[in-house]
Length: 88
Image (cartoon, rainbow, N blue to C red; front, top):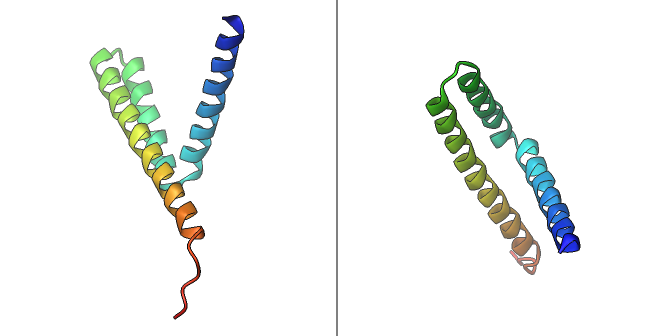
């Protein structure tokens, strides 16, 4: 069981690292992520739990959507690269 848990932890850690790299390399997502992190920080520091919760939910929804779109675009590019060249 311990080996399984270690393996799952390593897989999760790798997945998180890859996801962060995808998000921070993209110009479309980097700035919004920084603003979202600041909003969460500011809400926590000002003692606003509802604001922090709302900012965290907004952030997680953005990350989920962005990663899905990045993965879909990557898959689309991979499919397109396998197409035979067109003869115009």
